[in-house]
Image 1 (cartoon, helix red, strand yellow):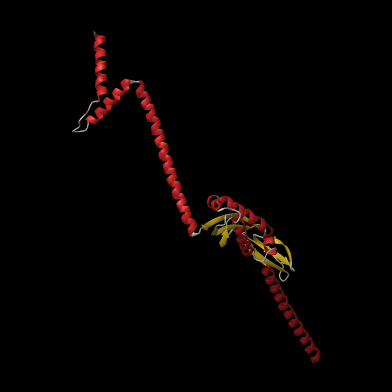
Image 2 (spheres, helix red, strand yellow):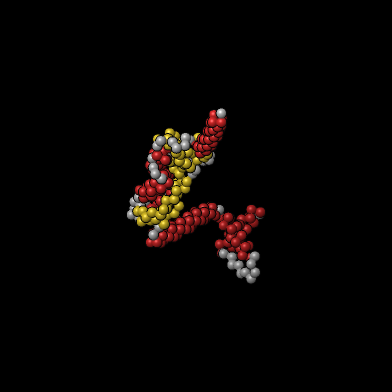
Length: 274
């Protein structure tokens, strides 16, 4: 009787241990499953997108906010959609009129297609910077120095269009380009300074000549008016004498023509009264 009881006790103990082990295994599996599920939850910001690869194949982009990927099977790459100011380093370029100068600029770019930005180029920022350097040299080389100094906006727009055509395949849009600085050789700067000074002198002489011309025309009209009316000449002479008389210690000399004219008019008035 003792042996069967002992065997039944051992069976119960084994069964109890098996159930405990099974419970632990189930708990571990549940915990691992929860951890795996939590690891599959991803969050990207409003200005980001997550490009997802499943078993090495791109299946698209997700975001912003919370999304789920399959652990061990999926991989994702974050891509920022914010505007980037890509600096174009100083470039030694030659204009179409054979002037050597240094130019640097900024290009403002933004990723509009994150899938292309990840799949088509290793590092779109570095690639865009390299393309911008080449495009800057090409565009500047088709313009003369005077155009570079007076038409910066038009040239910057041409550079933007050239860059945008090349980066479109990468899902990158070029919003605008700014030519920041154009460094001219010292000889060119001195020559431009002399040219500007000569231009200012020319304008000053032109203005002075136009003033003299207008003054001579007005004097001619005044002389013609006075010549047509002798009395006006006498009145103008008397007005001038009155202005001179206002100064102290002035000696006034009356022209003979004035005295004769006044005497003639006085005699006419006397004859008319008689």
